[in-house]
Length: 384
Image (cartoon, rainbow, N blue to C red; front, top):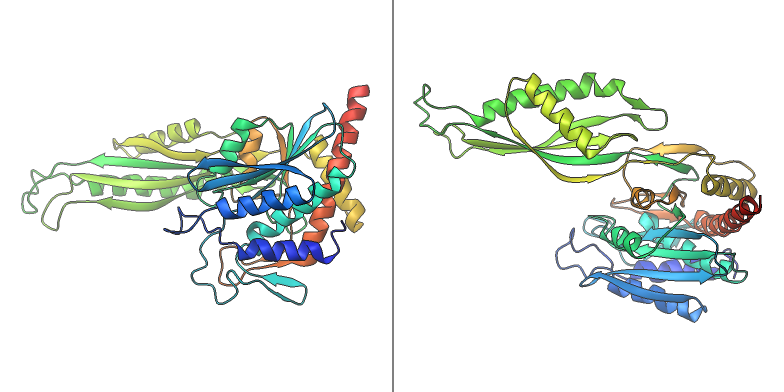
């Protein structure tokens, strides 16, 4: 199968037509079962071993495997879920092709990459490597990444290529994040009883000012060569019981974007230190965190993609980092050398979303070439 023929475009169109809006973002949405089952049937029709893993009711991963020996395992990953189609000006679940672009929800983020992985795996199966190649087409990346989390619990990977849109760049680093809640307490009293009341909101106000100062001064100096500075913002604040009552409680939700080398534990210590500096007392609680990613450009998987892109385009890809988080860190935390390379387009989560079809075909070819180079390099290293 050639990634340049119409089959890749037809496959992408079929994927876009399947409603896979994430039900945690769109109440009542169907989730990923239908698209996962479609992918498994497509793989089976092309002679590829594939199956559905149900992560939770209605939330499914599609997994496929090509195995040619006892060597290492390389995983190709993309997510099946999309954000809402509400607010799109047109072509939500009805793809349209114009000027070499396909329009529709998920074309860019990231069903174009799903199609590229599927076609690449069929190419790989024609001459299986001395190891295992897995396709991890996962659910729920747009919300809590339960799909990738489930996959790494079930299957070992020595290396992974995530295929989030990268606009031709090789992504070797991305930021992580920590969501934390800070709670202050006051003393409830009638609004006229200033001598009795203590406002938890006023206490939180001093903490907010200290956090903002820390973000603008200290964190701007804490930088990574590919990712820029760390950052923090106060996202939501709630508190108080009424106009005429001193607020007995206040809750602040903070997001801290982290750099490689930082952890949730270090961020929580940082927050407590800032609160102490503000002269206040508060409870600090981690709500959720995701690790940052950093993969050496000289790693086998990175070099495999670099060489494959160079062969396909005539130029080496830009080595880059991105400020947003992706499933790549979940694979890296599970022990896999992980990078990201994906198609070109625009409009992720937007009213108009499109992917460049030539870039999808190129992505399929780069993935196929990267698989070949990865296993050849690993075999040469083992012989030595």
